[in-house]
Image 1 (cartoon, helix red, strand yellow):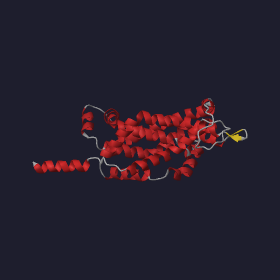
Image 2 (cartoon, rainbow, N blue to C red; image 1 turned 180 degrees about the horizontal axis):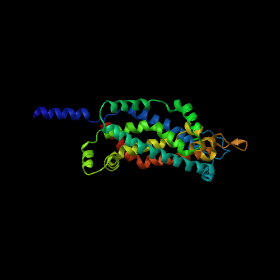
Image 3 (cartoon, rainbow, N blue to C red; image 1 turned 90 degrees about the vertical axis):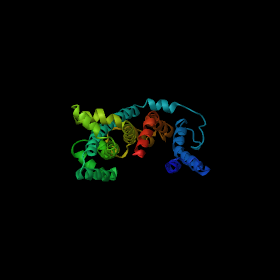
Image 4 (cartoon, rainbow, N blue to C red; image 1 turned 135 degrees about the vertical axis):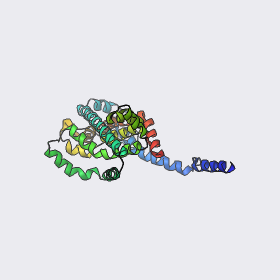
Amino acid sequence: MKTEKSDKVVMAQVHAPNKKVGWGVYVISAFLILLYLLPIYVMLNQSFRYITDLTPRLYLPEKWTFDNYIQAFHDPNLLNGFKNSIVYVAEVCALEVFLGGLAAYGLARSGGKVSSALRTFNICVMMIPSLSLLVGTYSLMVKFHMINKIWALSLQTAAIGMAGTMFFYTSFIVSIPKDLDQAAAIDGAGILRTFFQIILPQLKPVTVTRLIMIAVGTWNNYAMPTYLLTNTNKATVILTVRKAFYTAYGSVQNVPLACAECAVALAPVILLYLLLQKYIIEGQLDSVSK
């Protein structure tokens, strides 16, 4: 009995969190946070200035103004970019979760060397940089007349991210007992019904985590839309913001207005993190425990 108690005490001490953190850790953490927030501070600082304000970018504006944000919200190009980006993100999220989840379910539930080989191949596909596929992808989409079409860009983006989605789902589905599938089959449920009504509800944390990763990556996607969306009416919000930084208003470039449009474009991503951060943390903790 004493040996068992001593073993439990030792294990508790080993797994107990270290509460003694040196001051150096806090200093480094604060420095990294400030370094990360510096570009955001400069962007917001510039967005509240008049175009004639030439004080250094780290200084506060001489006179504050909201005119840049008012003008940004009345910019039809920015509003059109928001609409295109929302459609783009929604299509990519739906494709990846639906198709990637089903494919991962099949890989996780089927055993044997073929399934193992496919999972290894899926990991290898994740290692391929997306930009290395740019020339081939562009040539293929031109051949099939898929340029300047949001749905075509959504298919291309979902295809690139499918490997990562399958990897996430497969790792979690493996930990779910197969008894649930067998019980659902006895009740007459098919594969689709079993997945969407039994398996998918248990994957809520990882689904939300993956959805946020997909949405943020798609919203900020710049390289592929630059080549595949050459029509201004089809431009995403990132392309609209990029154009604002390179467009001259009169004889002087309006940097404050461009910064205001950039801040408006970042707002949905920040709100998404704030609203769903609880599920992100749950998904990360679940992945660590597994």
